[in-house]
Amino acid sequence: MTTSSVTRSAPDWPAAAPGTPARGHCRFCGEPLRHTVVDLGMSPLCESYVSAERLNEMEPFYPLHVWVCDRCFLVQLEEYVSGEAIFTDYAYFSSYSDSWLDHSRRYVDQMIAQLGLTARSHVVEVASNDGYLLQYFVARGVPVLGVEPAANVAKVAEEKGIPTLVKFFGRSTAREMVAEGRRADLILGNNVLAQVHDVNDFVAGMKLLLAPRGTITIEFPHLERMVAENEFDTIYHEHFSYFSLYSAERIFAAHGLTLFDVEELTTHGGSLRIYARHAEETDRALTRRFHALRDRELAGGVNTLLYYEAFEERVRETKRQLLEFLIRARREGKRVVGYGAPGKGNTLLNYCGIRADFVDFTVDRSPHKQGKFLPGTHIPILHPDRLREARPDYVLILPWNLKDEITAQLAYIREWGGRCVVPIPETTVLP
Ligand SMILES: [Zn+2]
Image (cartoon, rainbow, N blue to C red; front, side):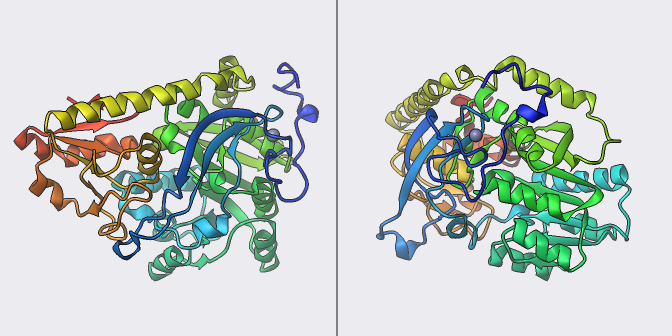
């Protein structure tokens, strides 16, 4: 395809491939995948924490190979593991990060004001997790329904009084909801679009569920930030797709939804919140900031293969830097421990080959992770109190996107001269 036809002429945009995505083909448009963005080798599923009893068992490793489609420029992994296998017993509980809860509360206030939501409105969150966000709508009297495939996580939401449907979202779930008389004035999905294998089924489901003048907001890590800030550790098997505004706009358009606004957020190393409406509704025009971001992405070359070519070498250099730092620290007899056990940490540690030989242990506030071991690397996950006992020289912050929050919590390590280190975009010992 030519790159000049893309800004306005919707008729030239790729159509959704029919049926479920075929292996080796773009999950949106069906074109064969021919171009590598980065190959991170073999890695275990990043949320499959290992219990002590299972330490001697085999762990499945899968390729972590990122491709870009040369037709629609969707950056993606192939599906090596089914979504069902990943998400039905998902260990990630959203409520364990203060800044994420704060982000969610502010979003709810903003949406209630902006869309005029009341006790007669209906809000649906797809991948509602433990009710971390919907609880704020409930507190303000706005009716909600969560859709969450992980039964263990959905149960926590129900216990908090947040009605939750234990299902994967797509056309068939949307049809069931509509048949029960539910249409959504607001559909939201935070960090779920990237985790959907059949992106066409998911977006088509939102089209079905959305009330005639309803609004969709979706947040996802912004591909532009990942490339610019070298955030390769946000790549993991659970993230099938890596969206630019460019690719997202095409996918929504193929399903009769128009993106009309976008916000740039600092969450997850730089995310977008896109706003969509029915294509048939024409009185909400595209905002100035939407045009500005679209133009910026195109000026950067997001719809050219050249844009993706330099990424892999930067990733390799990041690995060399981090290993150099760790080798030097350990040779000098310094003690290094980790902070956090996020998915991104597991991509980083497995790709770099960092085990307990470099990082003695890591700590995490989530009791669901404490006492377990990181997948692949088998670094033990302990309670945060253990940091004070160990008095490490360096604390490697794995969820670097929360580094301000974490360094504030860890101010006490300065008592014994400890320092925090972030690995991304490059290894940096924080002042
Ligand atoms: Zn494609």
